[in-house]
Amino acid sequence: MHNTSSFSIEDDHKQEELVYHSTVRLPEVQMKDDGLYECHVGIIDKTSRNKVILDSGSIILTVIVPPKSISVVAADSPAPFSRYEAQNFTLVCIVTGAKPAPVVNFKRDGELINVVSTAQSTSSVEDQSKKLPPAKTKSRNVAGLWSPQALGTRDIDDTKIQKSQPLQEHEGNAARLGQDGPDDGLQDGERDGSEPKPTTEVIPETVVSREFPRWVQSSDPLYYFRHKKQAASDGTMEVRAMLTWSLNPQLDNEAMFSCEVNHPALSMPMQAEVTLAAPRGPKLSMTPSHAKVEDTVHMAVQGFQLGPSTSDVFPEPMFTWSRVGGRLLDGSEEFVGRELVLERVPAELNGSMFRCTAQNPLGSTDTHTRLIVFENPRLKKEKQHFIAINSAGSLGCVTLIFMFTLQSLACELT
Image (cartoon, rainbow, N blue to C red):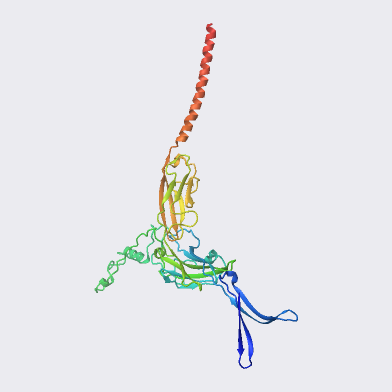
């Protein structure tokens, strides 16, 4: 605090005035310095020795704090891939340590996304995801998320393709040839002598590969945006901004989404980026590399550790282990996790093939590894040692009997 004073004299009344200047300086502003500041002006009554307040003034100091961290995560991750049903996908941008709350925008490949705002809510991300309209695959809804399905209806088995209506009509007309009179098989123009009308060749539908989704989407989906704010104990705000749309694996794979944060304490926006990518074939490691009978074998996915993912695949894949042509060692059909542990492997697992499936909402891929189990010399030595002990005991018994017989014969001879 620094005080100064100065004098001024008015010419008209020859009055002398004393002007006081009081300054409070905060060299390093902290969050605790935020608030109301007051200045009181008064005098000391010489008679009563009490302070008399003559006037006062106040000012509010607002301390702004830039965001400390910004990150983009996928809600409900890891999640499986579905070839037969469209899925809603949600990106969550988390901004912490800011005051006041920042403004968050989403971009796709550097272009600002036009979003449909929804009402704010204090519920969790999972609860808000349930409030969104479900993904549709058969008809176009009011919001225009989906385009009509162009292909004919299909059974669950893609090899059983139901024929489209034009193809059914074409086959029906062919079946009626020779049944409608003497002019059967003639086109409309041939009956009246005019030129025949051109016809369009009907091409039958082909079998659709299982690697592609069965549903047809619009290339311009609607993006739903919502956010919530929460005050932290230190007075800053945490903002969670959520972007939800109906995922299209063909178009959204390799698309870059960025979360842009604007704040008055920033000279330029902060930004966090993620690139959506389907998982590639995971690389597997096996420990020990030469497994023996009764060893504990660890099969793990390389590039992934317990905790945050170190891979460039986003969102984080879900790994499922299974044994080709049989069950796992514990009797289950599959195991979900980054590492499969086989305890005390028996010799019967020698040559078994294990499959690791990596999948996220953008796609799925498999990697196989074969388990080779070698003989365990330690177990073989223990078995031989056990047999040798039994054999020594048997020979000892025979020797005793033989010696007893010789003694008996010697007594008889004497």
